[in-house]
Length: 627
Image (cartoon, rainbow, N blue to C red):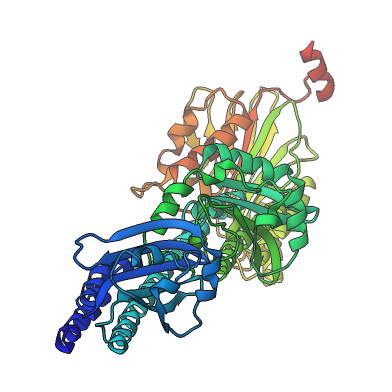
């Protein structure tokens, strides 16, 4: 037989090849040729089996032949199940004449060679299947030495396969970690609930599965939110299933708060919309052929039951509960139409579900907080403004960022005993509960005083005194303007400011002027008096009061909206108060690249109707006008 030194050199080369191989089949030449060089060996044949009795692959090389015989198949050989080894390799000697074709597909090839004995080593590669490596020998062979060489070759093959699996697992873990990191980044970049849920579905397809459905848990049960699929046609079908299918609805209801991911396949899907169809096998044949041609393919690490053998892949679904901060927020259902070996592990799905749940819960909490802030903000502002034929009044309020908590901007308009109207606007320093409390105190104090006929300067002084008595830790700015109609059709503006941005007046001819007035912030010193500024406005003149959120909106280049405010206001000449208020707010919002302060505006347009004019009640006038 071949010398031991020759075999030792061949074995050394085999180990070197095994350390570089990316698939076991790459070792074939380094295994078969040295075994054939052994004295008395006429044929080397290897097989790969799955599920105990499914022959996936057979390769044979005879002495004197340059080309191996390779058979790729998915043939069931029930009698071969008895050959399946345990955890340790098993070496067996069998006369070729005693081989039964029903359990030994190698028999036909062995009978074509001079060898009288088949020496075969069966061994396990992974939990899904086993393999064998054998040689046909004649009487000249040292059978014990041949058995030793077979055992050594099998050791290299098993070690190579184990290394490939380990590297595959590490590569998959790396890919999974990268996918999870990207998923977290994508999902956390949105605080909109439905957009977050749609991103969960999109991220998973096709990297994790062929399709995905996401449901949000509501008090009345699961609510479908998003679905996606690699096929546009099947995506539409999934959307319909997610919304209306009773089988899926019942499954999700049964799952409840179960934290484990469940995989369903085969008979478990009977009666469901996921039962196997021809569509599930569109790409299966090419994939199966590839699987069968590679003896190392079929790493089952993390795989789940459900993918059938043969020429197609059965549909498998998994359902994972989305749980965050101790409560269930929804579920994600994945639809698979791929080989079993490519199904994700339960651990990966749990990690993805946990990240998705946290992102969804953050979005839900943001939504709740946003609604709470907006609701509180609404309660700090007047529900309506006075309706009068003499004044066209309107206001606008834009919350800079609801997550920054409730702001301190406020405004109001009140009618006074002498027939005039008072406008007030202010801004409390800071945000949050304390700012909200101070906002309520300031608005209601000023409103009460002005309704009683108190002049603007006295009203601001008394508010300042109240703030000092309450030991308020925050200061605020405010401006109060009273508008008193005169018999000549003009109106007298009396304005008092406590450190607040000056109001603007848009004249009927399109010019814009600033009401020059100033005074100390409220809540800073004990005894403060405020001086009033008076000026006249004519018919169709408009007074605009605002907070610094409007003027301090800043573009990317650093310029403030304040610098273009007069021009933007002048361009709104002729429009009613509501249009002016809304337009300025939206323009400032679109202008700013930085800054998230709230914007409040109060706009009053004087119609020019003098006191004592013979006017119908406002509602009756609207009816008459409509005719």
